[in-house]
Image (tube, rainbow, N blue to C red):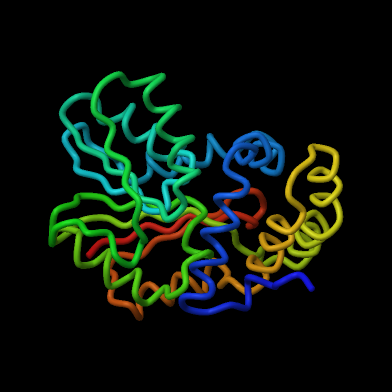
Length: 241
């Protein structure tokens, strides 16, 4: 029987997510672009514009995956800034490293680790980013504590992830896409059906934009702001410590 990874907690979820992303690392970029209809790169760019990344910032990209957020940040920082990418899945990091070395000769800082235990120094980062990661962590409260620990006072936390539209027709359209259209796209592209069933189920169980906004405030983040993309199916959140 297929395991519903969205229901798992703690170490079991961490192991499930690690195995899943190690398994889909090579086709991940192609399928992600297909599912987002090629708009995921634009959402990352808009989110980083919103955070006003500076060329001398120190940035930690948690759950860096195949490195698309990491690469966009590295491009914006130039030679003065520093970005470290951390991910639990070694195969995803291997793809990220290949892409990074092709674009940026020299030292690339990519490490195996988790969003709840980064190994980074206290108050060492100006910005922490997470792109389509928070929905997959085993303990969001633990991640929030770690983000607050590694950010300098006044540092920023930026997250982009799936969401659920508040407007009913948009919500129904989003649910229909995830449940009906997306499996067809995955089958045609030869993707991993279990992994994208997990995407559908985990999205249903993840807080919507307003709920996550409140959760961040309750966790102690300040100046919490949020915005939606794709009729509310994607949400970006930005806050300060």
